[in-house]
Amino acid sequence: MPVGTKRFAIFDMDGLLIDSEPLWLAAQKAQLRMLYDLEVPQAELLAFQGTSTTEFCASMARRHASLGVDAQQLLTAMLAHMSAAIQGAPLMPGALALLRQLSQQGIDLAIASSSPLHFIEAVVHTHNLPVSVFASGLEVPRSKPHPAVFELAATRLGAGSPAQCWVWEDSINGVIAARAAGMQVIAVPDRAHPQPEQFAIAHHIHSSLLDSLGLDGRVTVWQDRT
Image (tube, rainbow, N blue to C red):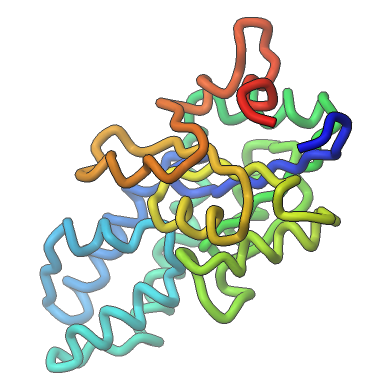
């Protein structure tokens, strides 16, 4: 990337900026059990990390049609369950510091999440995050690992090229989506991820968002790759 080219930063939300993946997992288990007396193996549920709730519910309906799983009923129950819970999810280590540092450096920021827009807005308001551009996986025809939500975020940021965009992601579906969009990707995988080798397709792998900050508090990835 030529020196002086404007950069943009796009962040996933669940599991990256906020510690909400356990809440989503608990909601999935609770609603499937309560509505359909269905116990789904955790490994099957974890495979949906990074995808939209709509896609999750549609997949459950296809896979478990014999048990009467209804996509719309499950979606309504899931979103109602998470509407209040999401605001109680704490920030991940380094999240606020990284966002503030990027903002202070003049980097335009966006959140591109598979969660509904009002969930994103609630989290930003609750934690006073310096982000005003949002894109939801529910706004596009296909969710991650399809790149559409990142492409929407880039458009709303006013990025002239995908190569100007740097994406922070914690899920393999999100990393695949960002790479498919032609963007630079910093993966921050869950330490308990069963297949960490999958994240090798990212341009950088950080153990936490704190790794993106140097000792002087400045964002380090700009110097790692041009």
